[in-house]
Amino acid sequence: MASSAPIRLGLVGSPNAGKTTLFNALTGLRSRVGNYPGVTVERREGQLEVGGRRVVVVDLPGTYSLDPISSDEAVVSRVIDGQLEGVEVPEALVVVADACSLERSLMLVGQVLRRGLPTCLVLSMVDELAARGGSLDRERLEAALGIPVVEVVGHRGRGLGELRTLLGDPESWSRSEIPPPEDPYERGAWADSIWSHVVTQRAAPNARSEAIDRVVLHPVWGTALFAVVMVTFFQLIFAWAAPAMDAIDGGIAAAGEAIHTALPGSLLGAFLADGLVAGVGSVVIFLPQIVLLFALLYLLEDVGYMARAAFVVDRLMGRIGLEGRSFVALLSSYACAVPGIMATRTIPSPRDRLVTILVAPLMTCSARLPVYALLIGAFVPEQTVLGPIGLQGLVLMGLYLLGPAVALAAAAVLKRTVLPGEGLPFTMELPSYRLPTPSLWLSQVWGAAWAFLRRAGTIILAVSILLWMLLSFPQVEPEPGMDERQAAGHALAHSFAGRAGHAIEPFVEPLGFDWKIGVGLIASLAAREVIVSTLAQIYAASDEEDSLRASVRADRDPETGQPVFDPPTVAALLVFFVFALQCMSTLAIMRRETNSWRWPAFAFGYMLVLAWTMAFAANRLTAALLASST
Image (cartoon, rainbow, N blue to C red; front, side, top):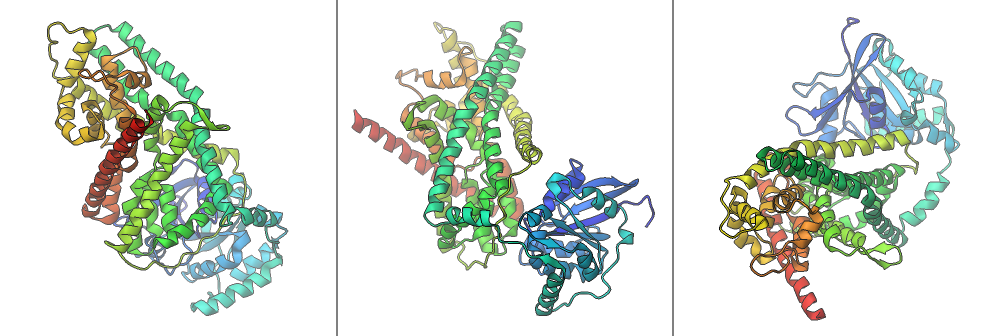
């Protein structure tokens, strides 16, 4: 191997072994994400420089064994064995194992050693092992395996310098002279013998984790704790984000007013203020809530609580015919359905995987939050109902729970009708409770916030520009006797977008929606939150003085004088967005994961029917309740 040639290393390890943390610590931001050719499994590569040599690190999917039962695990074996066309075989392998569970990881280490490639072993979480009074003899482990062993704490940087030096010279890695047995039973005996030889002090059970788990995993108390965590979660999203949202709202309003002042009555001024600033800005306003949502979500995940929540809910998953891997994928969909659907690759049962894909869009993704926040902030009173618990937070929590409740019901129906079949056994390893480092936590939150801003700067910006054109043309003359506000409304109604809204009005009118909401629904097919920017442009064109929340509250039907957004309409619109599949990115990833347009079309169709039916019911029920209370 020439000194100038890049070194290609494969990173192998089981889920939760610390492999991804180590990959990020080694490569930083110099990584790229794609898919393996011909396989819908994520492929991550990063680079680092060691002694003037370029090292390419390939982060292979997490696996417990090289005898695969899922598409993710199959990729690991195929890459190592050179069976995946278009993918270079790694020149050496780096196996990452949790020091606290090395006894189990040695089975995977044995399988890797039989491949005959230069290999080194990285022991992660050695700080956790020491905290529990355990210790290993690294020199004995190196001698027993015949390969280098490095101890690291990836998120704190411990041992990374030694590991980087080692990665720059895989030619010097010794190979195991006597390969481990191939038979599973004999390999287990081999792993046990090595473990008993290298362990100098067995780690005591994590008394703190076990004490906490007696409550967290309890069938009754664990469920009650989960409810308390969720209530607190959604209360904080509204309470803590409000000041920052108001500040951004004021800044965007000032920017729009400044543009109109500088370019009064011009088409360019209207485009900049009503198309760009109002369109994109109306979504950026919700950045504080997005940041808070992911900050709390990542904190719960990194601490170790989300894995316990999965365990608590797994009892319910079993009753509907799915298993823990499906819950993990559905949980990922709370951030976005796209990575949630991609996470189904770890599900070994094809039928369970397809069912999970078909219901994942019903989970309440972050794209719905701007819609919920706008309508709840505008129409739900800002009052407490039980101590510090606010009504707005309770309504938001109800919407967030309604989607998954129906998702589980839909999964149960699909498992018993369209896609029946038995699931495969699932083992879930619970990580120890530990606080994440501030840098890791902040980097996760920043990644989510940047993804939201990037979406606002690409998809929403493009749709906002298109919408402004459709809302502004063709330009029509006002009818005699119209004032300025009436003329603006007349122009909107006769624009291209207004005509489209009127065309679908018979379809949405039973839900209480007018043509303006219809325009928003059409636009939101690109992305759910686009309805906010659409309404912002519509109301900016007709009334430049008020904020969007004030404008939707004040809007009246010109014929009846009744509020356009009355309680039945608001309830129906919220419920419609709980169920409708309004996201082109989700449909595209469903097409790629199922290799057919049949299932995305099925998902879009059944969710549209479900959304319309449930929205109609919400409208009529709200109207009936209001009538009975008067």
